[in-house]
Picture 1 (cartoon, rainbow, N blue to C red):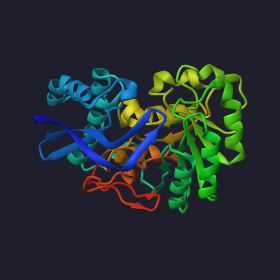
Picture 2: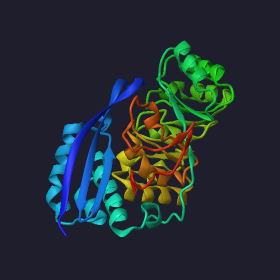
Picture 3: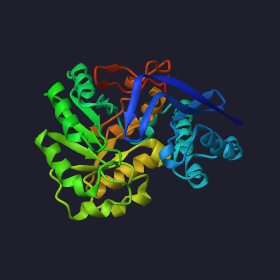
Picture 4: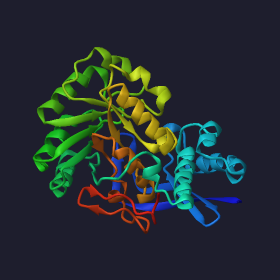
Length: 327
């Protein structure tokens, strides 16, 4: 049965702007892969990330390089050998999961080993800004149970104090995006402990993980940029308490599930994370979220416009995806 691949670059406006230590953006640029076979249509979305040397154009070129194999019937196992971990493989892997579900009638979560999918409580991101700006954003989101704060180094203690004042009852995750320095890390972590932060993501640049091995961790620390797939997991033992599993890093749901399971066996907690994308990018990550202690799948909540049909959010509670969207 012949299979047809199509690829598209799509742009979705962000509500306001999304600001982290590396810069700001006002739109989400995503790449969507669609596989059509018989009566089935499978879709997957990825978000190219410049931090990993990706652009929309480079991701499309990588997908196009796999076109012949995909249209000839390559399955998910073959795809893992064909392409490296990254955004391009993510779009194709998730499209294959969706296509398999549509053709077989077996939902993707059942094929992945989950009897049912439970709703998830997701973090809601507070972008980096001046303390008064971040306090105002926290006040607007104070009814949400979990907030994720973007920080950048200098001035972060004032930002953290401002957010805590604006949202006194919310649990907090801090994400430094590799922006903290080793010499200031003990002070930053102590401040996080004082303000009741539940988790700190990637405080130091990837490659400086050895510093964490001998440093007290008053707050659990989660690897993000330092972990991509199972090959990058072992060196993090004893240096991190948790790992952030993102499909755009792992190269799709297939490796994401394998990474999460391997990490749990090694004693890591799991965070299910995302780039800023639409509901199509979040939907397969809901399966990883079933294994996670922390969930950060708020991409659509940050957009001015999501794709239709999209995921259903009730406040910060994310409902499992309908099959019309994915899986």
